[in-house]
Image (cartoon, rainbow, N blue to C red; front, top):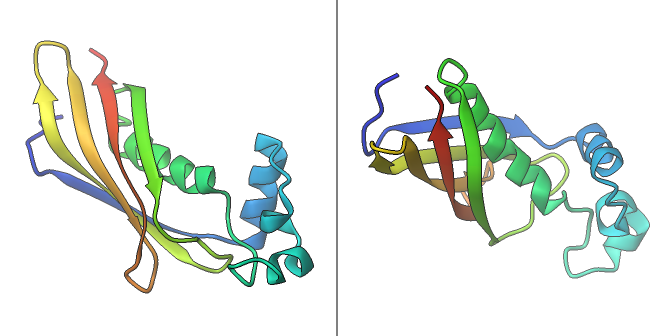
Length: 132
């Protein structure tokens, strides 16, 4: 797989109630802001929001998918949560190559997650190592 600065990869995923509940089970994060509609109504969001790390998992999925033929090791991920992700939102993750360290096989990517309204919900940076 040949990579170039500016190469971009995207995937979209709908955030469903079932997905949020499954993520709570896997992660052990049962915060009522994610699971309890009555509780969530009384927060600043007015309704349930998805786990921030669920969106982080969407980033991991894009990288795992795009680099499936050229196995990777996920080295790091920064994330800044800029807007809530609600149940029923569609989140599009876009990862764009910004730096390639050829001698070590390390690729740095800008990561941006947006919802169906075009709002940015997460921004960050991924680093991966391409395996031989």
